[in-house]
Amino acid sequence: MTALQQKEFHARTAQHSKELEALTATLKEQASQIQKVSDRLEHLKPTKKDLMISRIISRRSVSGGTYFQPQIVLQLSLPSW
Image (cartoon, rainbow, N blue to C red; front, side, top):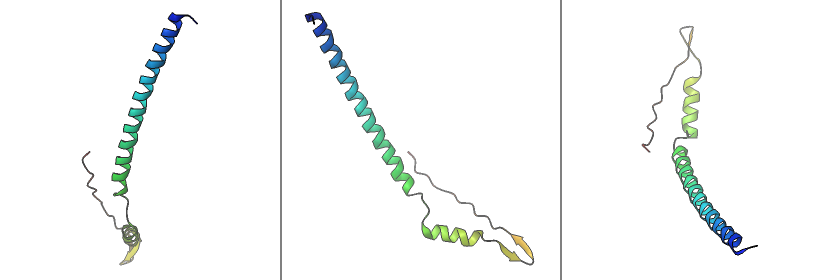
């Protein structure tokens, strides 16, 4: 291997190392952002109590011989990101 080839090899290796460091930093930042979103979504999951209330309300009831299905409209307040 000539001196010029060695120099080019080391230059490419150094460049690849920098690119790898940048990609690693980007990956870590994206993982952090994903975790933040996951944590926020965790707070939106219904509790067992919510599910039981929903099940009770959504059961078909008989009123004067007419079947009706109560409907509930939920409004979720999403955090501003």
